[in-house]
Structure formats: C-alpha cells, structure tokens
Length: 308
Image (cartoon, rainbow, N blue to C red; front, side):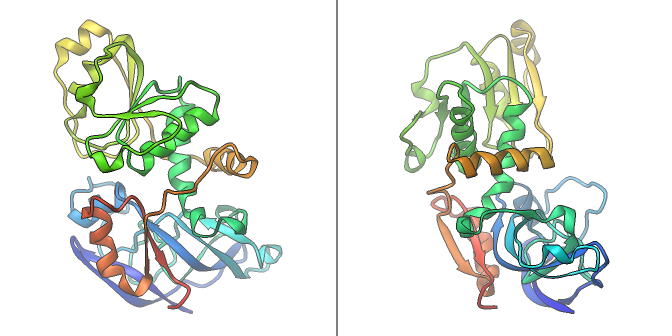
C-alpha cells in the first residue's frame, strides 16, 4: 500500500512524494485523510532546522499532527471502526521517512485507539482539535489566564477556552493591528496596557524574549505559563525574584484534553469558527508551508487532500 505524503527532506526543502506504508496490523485502522493542518509552532522549527534534538528527530520526515478523515479499512481487531470520521494526531507508518508527526499524507495507518471519532459536520475545522487540546492543557494545569500574549490561532483558542470554562474574559496582547479582531474580549497593543498585577499570564507567541516582558506585568507570586514551543529562553533574575514569580511549561496535550475539547465543541461552548484563514490543495504543499510560516495574514493553513 502506498500514499502521497508531504516529505521534509531537510530544512526548507519540501516535496510531495509517494511512499510505501507499513502493513496494517490487527489493531490498526487505515484512514483516508481529507484535510491536514500546518503547525506554525513545531513544524516551523522543523522547517527552519531549529528544532532542538530529541528522540526520533531526523530527516527525511513526514510532518503533521492535525488531520481528519474517514476509516476505510481496519485490522481484524478493529473492524468496527470502518466508516468512522476521525481526528488523527499523527502516524508512524511510512517506509523510508520518519513519522514526525506523520499526519500530512493522503492516507495513514495508526492504532485504532489513537483515531478519535469526531463529528463529521466539523469538516476541515476538525483539524483544530490538536491546537484546542494544546490550549486546554495550558489552562487545565492551573488558574485561568488573565493575560494572553499573542492573538494567533493558539492565543484565540486560549481566550475562547478561558471564557468557555467560566472564567472572566482575558486581555490579549497583539503587536499586529490586523490581528486585533475579537468580540468577547479585549485585544490591545502591550504598550497601551498599563496593568502590572496579572496573576496568570499565558504566552502563546513563542517569542524567545518574552519572559522579561511578562515578568514585568506579574502580580506578586504570579505565574507565567509557556504554551508555545521554544528553542531557548532567558530572563533577568532580579525582577522575577522580587515578584516570587512562578513559571509553568505546558507540555504536549494528552488524550483527556482532546476528549474535553471535543465535548466543549459538541456542546456549543467552544466555537472553532473563523480560525482557518487559508486552504490549498495538497499538491501545492511546497508553496503552502512557507506561506503558513511567513505570511502575516495566514492565521491557519490547511491542506486539502480530497483531489490527490
């Protein structure tokens, strides 16, 4: 069995190629992918070659952990899953390429337990469940944020989830005037915000120099939550010392986070509308990926696999 897949051969060198798939196991499902998202956090680091080394890292690789599609075949222990519409958080099923994270492909094979059934009516918006789960993981680990830094797609989901969980609407900082659109909470330039007593600040910008700015706005014993993905971070110690600042790293989302956001979306408490700004055919992946990383008007890029 084969599939067309996005291949990152080395930093800034990407192609769409046909790859052999590993055999379908007894507990596996085969998913025909319809849409996959491009992550401007982890995938951008792979694209630039700045991803810190960790187990499994290397090129060539198939990126992607935000895919949705239908189960079209399954092993003998998972036949009941055939026909399910599912969210795919990645796969490791390619011969000749690493599955980091392996979701940006025409079809994928993965353990049935990892293919989460979702409402088919979500369509392409279903790819946003990974980012929504990332935002949920950041909020569920402590008190809700009073300030969110960055109004990209992660920042928007953090703000929506904060409200969906019953907390007061947060303030959001955004440097790009074109991204200061919101109805349920205030989005401002940091220079226009004089407040310096935020109990919880959540960074969704991923900026390497964000800590000094955040610490300066903390209340005594306040917490900075790092919800992005970073290469290296540093900060001036004395201001953090005087505030008894706490820092929390929000790690990768867990299955419980996916289940929670799926429930919030199903109930209507969390909307995924208005977050996908760009969609391109998967055949244009070589142009779509750099556009997702470099175009300031691109909030979220989605690849359409239906015509491959």
